[in-house]
Image (cartoon, rainbow, N blue to C red; front, side, top):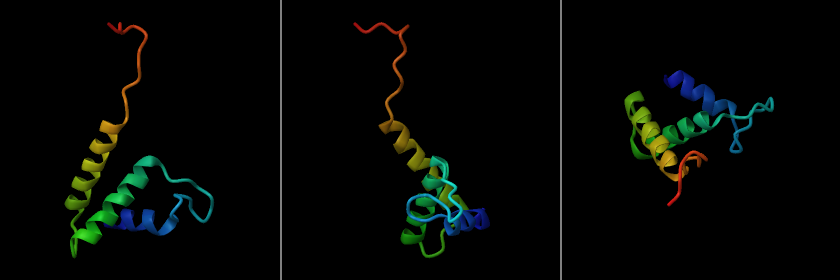
Length: 76
């Protein structure tokens, strides 16, 4: 996992674009953010720590994203 995280991080700039012009997915951006937080917070973060932070960041993002409105739902 650490190799994959390092590959993601080393291949992308701050805008989420690689030197080859490939754009990072939202998942990759969140995973990179989780690794950055883990490295700032812990001296040697484990994969488990990074993944727990990743899950937390995903949960926080989900809470900020409103659920789509479906026409079959009635608003009273």
